Image (cartoon, rainbow, N blue to C red):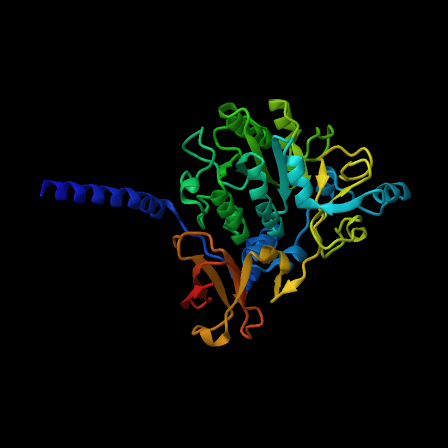
Length: 420
């Protein structure tokens, strides 16, 4: 009898231990709603700050709208080292000495001799997140165990904690909450974190916290990355940042640059003595407006590429350019079932099309796909807005079991169970 009671008690304790993290999450999280197109268009703040509007469209899979709405300001692009305007005859001749090579193959080969890689994104271009996701297994094979994300919210209570969502690595997926982050609410960013967790990375945040008010933002970020190296001096680290934080060189005195004197990569080099391998994938991504890089139309390949010359030098900009090491070219997407081809990850993800007769609520509506293995508080694995005619009705997901939640502005909701 005593053995049975002891066993029952142990089982109860185990159950409570499993339940506590879930209760803690529910107690502190505030889930954020995803906005439909009409709500985005009506949002006063988003109409004043177009970058926010663009990012809101990216959250719901409206990638073309997001790309068309926003690009970095001209001055900011030039300050970060991007070539703008027409190419001179000398610049064109120099560029023509380079040829495209498979970006993933090159980066993985180069990674073997690097310790820190910094790769950037445009915050409204989920394509960049999918590309980094594809790098993770190969980098892990080459010794990389740490993934640093600028996008994770900093911890307000613990000066040593690298991230506010302290259960992220244990849980293995981000929450649809500012507890985890803002940009991490986007489904492809969520999938990037899931992939990192399954592959064996320790995911950490390095954004400046309230405990570092005396430091410039990028200096604080570098100090936070240094915390990893102080604990593990041989650590191989992949850092994922926004836009120009990968710039290695000092900023010209007097240049308008949000009060910065250096970016993350420059501070990190000074603090550690490690020269990071810096990869810009934002410049050579297709932009459907006048901000398209003058190099972009000159590149002919249907896969992500870096450019090399006969001496093995990487193309990173005009001759003598030293702000970052490499540019990754992304070809313009081709639609497959109405979704961009890069979402399918060379066949690793599949299409699931929602038929009009399956919907019992009125559309337009959002379709949010949640894994059956994850909490309702998780970031969905994909989101689309289904139009009334169901012309856009395809989700792109990995193999698995899902609950697909349909929601409209009237507050109606429907759940579809899917085994893909």
